[in-house]
Length: 157
Image (tube, rainbow, N blue to C red):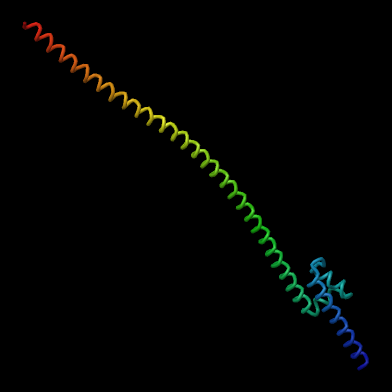
C-alpha cells in the first residue's frame, strides 16, 4: 500500500505545483482570464480538483477582487482625467467669455471717456462764451445807462 501512497503524494504535490504556477500566471498576466476553467486548463486538471482543494478557489477570488479594484482605480483615474479636462475646457471657455466682456467694457469706457472729454471741452468753451456774453451785456447795460443819463440831462435843458 505504501507505493500507492507515495505515488498519490507525488501526484498531489505535482498538481499543487501546477496549480500554484497557474495561479501565479493568472495573477501576473492580465490577458489570462481569472476563471476556474482557465486555471484548470493551465494546470491540466479537472475543475472539480480546484473545488475539492478549496485554497485555489480562495486564491482565485483574491485575484479577481484585486483585478476588480485595479479596474475601478483605472476607471476612476480616467474619469478624474476626463473631469479635469472637462473642467479645464469650461475654465478656458469662461476665461474667454470674461476676456471678451472685459474688452467690450474697456472699449465702452474709452468711448465714454472720449465723449466725456468732448463734453467737458464744450462746457468750458460755452462757459467762456457765457462769461464773455455776460461781460458784453454788462457793458451794453452800462452804455444804456450812460445814454439815458445823457438823454435825461439833454431833455432837462
